Length: 311
Image 1 (cartoon, rainbow, N blue to C red):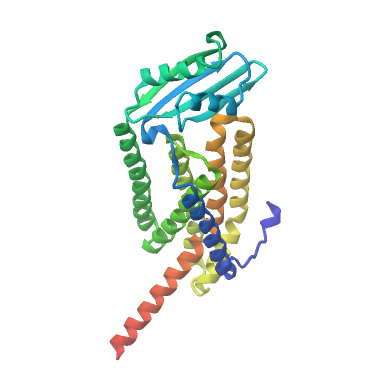
Image 2: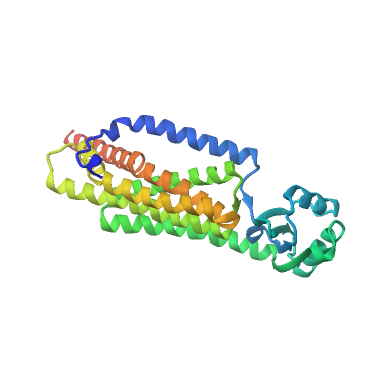
């Protein structure tokens, strides 16, 4: 971290370039959302059944999908849990309006039995969720994210002042929107695990922003005659070693999960990697510029009010 000990980067001078970068990334995400017809919701949100099957031999996803489609099972999502010399283990997510576990288990057994011998595969487990429960999960997931934003705004307004809270929420909304775009473009399924990853990203992004804002508050007290923009740049530079170290070590852990964690963990790790990257970026190029814009607007409004009163 000695490289950043004497850092003196003019981050806020590049804020307009950062706006263009953010707009471009958000645009790509929006195109991905439109192209895919929205986010790909898992059975936890839409209702349906999950059936886990093990095969004695390695089974290709294309062959498995052909067998299911040939039996009239359309729209089944196939996730390879394990594959190699010891056989294959797959998780089938089957969209069903009522989420009938017994019906799904029988349908999978019949579809696979038409292609493989009964001794070649085994239905290990099956779970089901009704569409009503899925809709309830959707509402609760959205509510959880909204509550996190409201509590954040109140917390930062209490700890600092209202403008810090607004700037932090702007940065966090920016991070969530970009992460949604990444999920759409990457074709990652929205599950309860994905929602947990989004809430984790909210916490990570806010923590990074709060560290910067805490230093801003300290510097505002120490250097009262310094311009607001210079104070923001100074605060970002002073916290830069901590930001780089924290983000770097977090990324190493997440990259390990993405590479070695297997098919079940990889989507969650990829969402978190995207969130950590955009969260680190936003604490520097979104939260601080938003705080500067809010401060400048408030100062101009106060000046206009004072001029009006004097007139």
